[in-house]
Amino acid sequence: MSTQLQTLSEQFNVLLTQYTNTYQEYISLLGSNNNSLTTFPNYSFVGQSTISTLNNSNLNNCLNACSSNSSCSGATFNNTLNNCTLSSGSGSLSSTQQSTAIAQQAIYYSYQLQQLNSQLTDINQQIANINNSSYGQYQQTQEQNQQQEQILLNNYQILTQERGQIEEMIKQFETANASYEDGNLNVTSNYYSFLLLLIVAIFLVIVLMKFSLTSQQTGGGWTIDGNKNIFYTFLVIVVIFTILSFTGNL
Image (tube, rainbow, N blue to C red; front, side, top):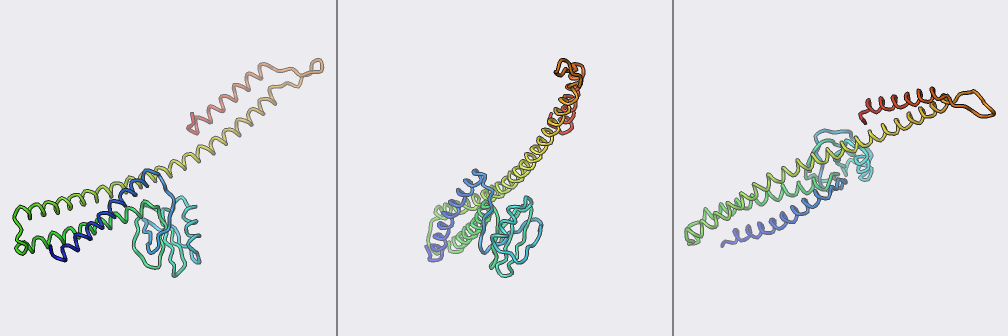
């Protein structure tokens, strides 16, 4: 085996180990539903659209600004200009000097997997090219060459297949994250609707108590008009059921 071929094989094995470890960490992170934002030096976050740019900022303020904005999916802090760019929508990381990306950990792992996959595919192709060009120099049997070519072909097919799986997992992660944010909005809306209904119900009960008691005094006590009591009770029930129907809670 030539020195160049041996060097490429060693590089391939090292990258393959990194790829396997990163892949396992990525799977574990997706299972944990951890959506917190993290900083990544020498990277920038590229989203679908820009929300705003904050001047005279710092890294902590930039992180807090994105975390407190429900539309912010990531941000980029420029260490030279001290400005913070908030972005929305699905995005990815890009290697950028003098910048710090603010994004979810899963986006960083997906970026690393794509880079490692690309490097492994490139080295695998270089090994295949060397093996084909130096066929007559190593006095290898045809069977050995076929086995080597089959191994390289299998590596390429596996890497190509896993690249598609990585892209699919990224789409699933973005879909799950969007559903999680929509669920939070619905819970908040239902909470305020409940408070409003509670206030209305309390008010109606007070009105019922006030108008169901008559002002006629008999023997030093108060008497209750039964017909009015039944009428106002029925009125409160009708109003509450009407409100529940309009708010979609019934």
